Structures are given as structure tokens and as C-alpha cells.
Image (cartoon, rainbow, N blue to C red; front, side):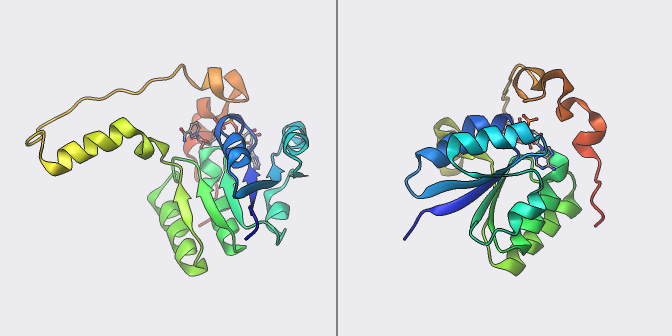
Length: 183
Ligand SMILES: NC(=O)c1ccc[n+]([C@@H]2O[C@H](COP(=O)([O-])OP(=O)(O)OC[C@H]3O[C@@H](n4cnc5c(N)ncnc54)[C@H](O)[C@@H]3O)[C@@H](O)[C@H]2O)c1
């Protein structure tokens, strides 16, 4: 069996730091196409990984050779790109959060069920060994009945890791949550 041909949509921080390197290092995947609305970002990734560059994800999804898609765009685009990719017959790994509303998330699940393709959300913290251990300790009853717990996870903020820095969509409330997709 040949390598799974992957298309990565959104060539920002998470694509550069996780999706590209991990697809590149995996023996069963190939970065076949990349897409970003900023042409320089798409072209730079395409050159580095020997992939085809797109600036319009609709065009990328027309490529029948692509079997799976990573959705690495701002949150408000997750649902529409995921549904379009599933309808185009691709498996999808969509970054978290899954969507910006329950309705959108349900549309994504419906599209996955209808297409018969795999939809996975990048809840990578679930694969962290310490979290899995905590789950196991709770489920087995080893730590007794849990009445409450406190946890914290921090980072230095989107301004330090988004490809757009202080101009990041993360800091624009309207872009974070507005459902621009006509459902
Ligand atoms: N799993 C994790 O731990 C983790 C960590 C960081 C970010 N994320 C998620 O990954 C997603 C992306 O975050 P990021 O940090 O890479 O953001 P980013 O701002 O660095 O990159 C987003 C990229 O998407 C591109 N883009 C915007 N609209 C597009 C479109 N219509 N078509 C194609 N490309 C488009 C932008 O030009 C930019 O290059 C977010 O949903 C975020 O929540 C997940």
C-alpha cells in the first residue's frame, strides 16, 4: 500500500510545528498539497515538502489524489472546511476546537457519517501520558471518589505563537466566534 496523500489547509503555527513535521516523519504519510490564503506561506511549505501549493481550499479539495486533510485554519473556518472535505471524499483531522457552535459540530458529524470517512479532532492532550494515567486512576477507583480537582495549562498567548503575532485572528473576537457559515 502506498503512502496516504495528505493535504494541509492553513500553513500557520500548528501546521508548521506539528502537522508538517509529523506527516513528514511518518512512513505512511506524504504531504501532497498545502493551502493558505497567504501565497508566500503556501509556497514556502510546498517548496519545503515537495507539495502542490493552493491558495483556495475548494481547489485543493478537487484534487482526487488527496485522501486526507488536516484543517489548521482559524476556528471559525473549521466546520465549513471539514464538511467540504468530507463531502469531497477525504478523511479529516481537524484542529481543536472542533467548531464554534454545537450546530456546526453536528453538521460535521453528519457529514462524516454520510461520507463514511474518518473525522478526528486534534484533542492531542488526550494522548498525554500523565492525563491518561490520571484517567486510569480515577476510573479504577484507585484514588477514591473524586469530589473536585484543579488543573492549569498555560502558554504565552497567541501574540507569541500565531503566525500573525499581534494581528492574530485569536485576538479578534469576531473572528473567534462568529458563525459566518450559512447553515
Ligand atoms: N492542538 C493544539 O494543541 C493546538 C495548538 C495551537 C493551535 N491549535 C489550533 O490550530 C488552529 C490554527 O492555529 P494556529 O496557531 O496555527 O494559527 P495561525 O494564525 O498561526 O495560522 C492560521 C493559518 O491559517 C491561514 N488561513 C486563514 N484563512 C484561511 C483559509 N480560508 N484558507 C487557508 N488558510 C487560511 C492563515 O493565513 C494562517 O497562516 C486553530 O484552530 C487553533 O485552535 C491547536
